[in-house]
Length: 192
Ligand code: GLN
Image 1 (cartoon, rainbow, N blue to C red):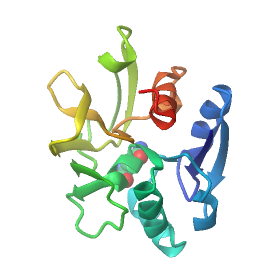
Image 2: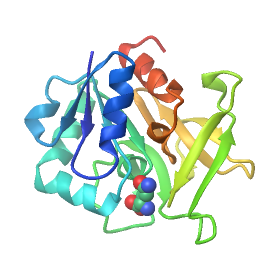
Image 3: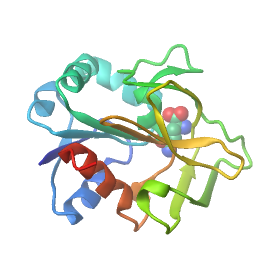
């Protein structure tokens, strides 16, 4: 199994390390030809405006859409989730738009710009998952086929899956907990 991590900008090294710790072949991706042989792609956190522009400039936006049609899985975290959404509050954002969700950028206001909270994620088991939120987006709406995996205590949606697509508003790569990466690998391999 081969997983690429989009390395245009943002927190990609941590994702590569997590995947390698799990014994998976993982590589940084910057060019369209580098996604050809991949089973899965992670779009990391960072600044969605910059990542989106770089994807466009390097001709990755359409290449990713095409690979997804041929079965590649995608896992987006924070800015990566924004880029996976078909709709956002940022009309100027350039993105592949892979998932039927509507997101709002920087949704938590100044006082809660960054925070950590324990999340109840039934697909990962009983133990709560440490949610690290950094200038995070939230998911305002999900379409019919999207499954909600986690919510905050006030019921804000922060983790979703749609078939081979997984998107989180927070940063699992900045924790010691590998369960979301493991879960993604199960999705990629068709075990889940
Ligand atoms: N605030 C960033 C954006 O809107 C996302 C932050 C992150 O990825 N940690 O793109």
